[in-house]
Length: 558
Image 1 (cartoon, rainbow, N blue to C red):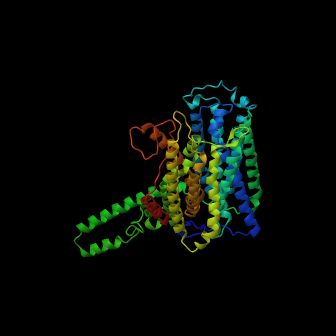
Image 2: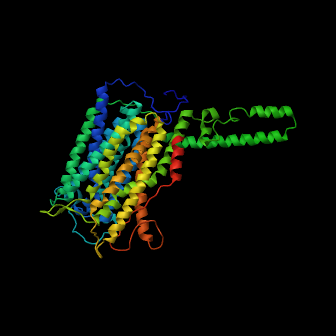
Image 3: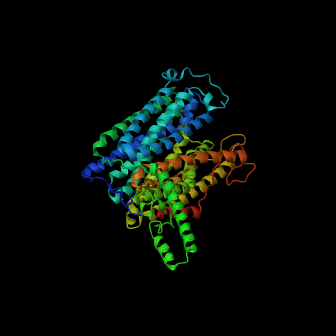
């Protein structure tokens, strides 16, 4: 594999298994301990991440900065966007230079610095030192985010934190999978990874929002972030403690620096080949000698006369064997990256449905009857608590499938299993949106005129959260498996980061789609369930057709 002229590609589909540069000499307990530490660190890191993002807009509105809620949502998108874009940068850095373990530690350090400043800004004592005196609360909306109080430190802190998130997120899943070197161990690792992520999500959903929103202490936001920040420190120290138990795959190279040159060289070689073919054809026409014709034909059997695989991909012209400049391995890696990008683009409709649990589902719940958890204090349950149904269904679903289903699928081709998971996930996501649309229709029928509330209980949302969780058991896990197994050695972190990037892109598309519907509702006939009254909540009714499934199947099999 270290031979630069090797024609063997490190692609894991259809050939499972990544060739490692050194044998794994760890004891069995050390291998298991390494995986456990990474999963525990992941759960704590995700708790800190969701603790920051779940109530970010609310925190910016109700804390010392007193931002307009619209600008708070914009800040959330800035945080999301920066975290996803930064995954691409740190993925290339870890693949080619630092390695995954060191990149994760660097990410944790940046993450902690950002979280420290987030906590200090939320603290009533230290807020004025960083941001100056809080402004007088203005009940009118502020037109632009740049006019908000403390906008520089807030946005800067969020972007710094997001960069740390990106460095950790781009490499943690891949790094954990590398610790389980058995074929089945790598596949099952992503089930465990999703469980760890959702355990962190459950605790962040139940505990931190209650501290920040369910209390009246002026420093409640600070206490919430302090709690999550301490757990982030524990996550960092835990990961560093396990460093000696990990297997560290040395940096290989990165496909980013070769992607464009391979494409350029392929077209240059193809143009030269076409030019030579035209010259040969004109030479044959002008020749009156049979011997000359035979000579011309024999000459065309040279390096440019037979382009291997040219009918399948123009990139094959960049191969050394076809008079290009690059080895077969590099060309194959670039081709595999193209197939992966196609799959993640085709998965955008699925991500659009996934993001409804974090956006319109919450908005829908806010306009429903919310039961009280205490008749003494008249404290209502938090709308975000309903998402625990999604997280629990993911954990329970994965455990059941691993115990009773997946053990019977070990003989099947892995790419086929991944495709089946994608299809099932998409079908369940469609059912989720269908249920959400029905509930929204019923909610609007029970809406109080002139009020943004309904007699329909928020507990009726539970089925849509459960079905979305079951969808993630298949679709979300399959996306992780595909991102890792379809990755060439030179782009494992990169392709995992492309998965996160497609998620981030989908969040922006989802936001733009909802705004477009809101603006053009009276002009165009969109497939939404809504009634023109004060209780309107847009529920995107998404469907998935067989064309998308077929295109994903083609990309996976290639």
